[in-house]
Amino acid sequence: MSLACSRSLFFMAFIAGAFALGASYYLEYTVGLTPCSLCLVQRLFLTLLCICCGVAAVHGPRRAGLGLYWLCALGASLGGTTAAWRQVLIQSDPLLQMVKCTPAAEPLFSALPWVCALQRMFNGGADCAEISWTLFDLSIPEWSLLFFVAVSILAVYQLLRLAWNALQRPFSGEASHPVLLRD
Image (cartoon, rainbow, N blue to C red):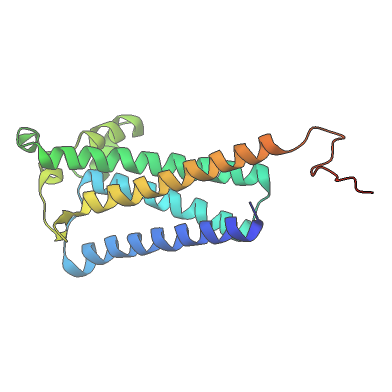
């Protein structure tokens, strides 16, 4: 895999993530939608993904660095996928829509340890079950889920490609291309 190819993939993932973050802030501050706790968790993972891809695009790492950056991108996208999937499940199940409301994020983090607060945020609440905006009949968590799954697929493909290229390299002392002997 060439350096230009990996840099452009990281840059495109960064631009797509920044666009999604911008859209979430637009919906919050201009349209007036209030994000629920799972939306904030998804936004956190999207921010981590953008930071990882942006740093990788600027850094332009070699083979080992590419693997590390793709693993970080995969971790952030899998975390976002999990949070988005949980919210899609809450929105689609009428029994889960009746769950008890959870408090806002700031009181949670000030009163509880951060691990417990994240767990309570991940459990969701009645505000997570509300579908307040759709585009092409898909809600915001469904769009988020599609984005995170696409980035996860890209990261897994790039990691497998890196592993395959590493296995194709010759062992020490061997030529990388067979030499053709002609008379």
